[in-house]
Amino acid sequence: MHALTPEQYQRLRRLAEAWTASHLRESKSLPQFNPLLAADALCFQCYRLPEHGEQLVGALVTPVSLWLVMLPERADGPGPVAGERCTLTLPSGRYPMEAIALGDEVACWRLVLLDDLSDVTSRQDASRLAQRLMERVMAGDERTQTPPEPEA
Picture (cartoon, rainbow, N blue to C red):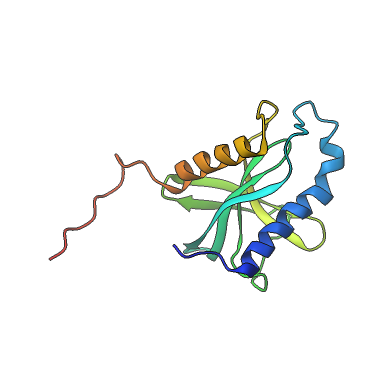
């Protein structure tokens, strides 16, 4: 795993901003809206997928939900088209993803992992929750993984 580039961090910041611009107003009327939270892209890492190439995979925390998100590693790469579906295969399993457009310039694949964050008491708690979930999603179950071959 390598560190994200400044450009990738900018893309993730734009992702959170696009969610805010697209959904914040309507989200305020939902019963699960949490005014203590803001959209934040967290725990992203580069991940090579046979069917999608290099992708950024991580969590998007919003005032109403927590998403598993995938988007192309590079901004100039082909992005998803809203409404398309795919399956994201990670060490922990297969995840059905749906493409969603967040405004005119930002699109990503997403799976809503938690649809109610109303009981989260701070942005720090939301960050810890996202980190724990992403650790589980990105790491497979040791009981089902094949042990590495011994070195000769």
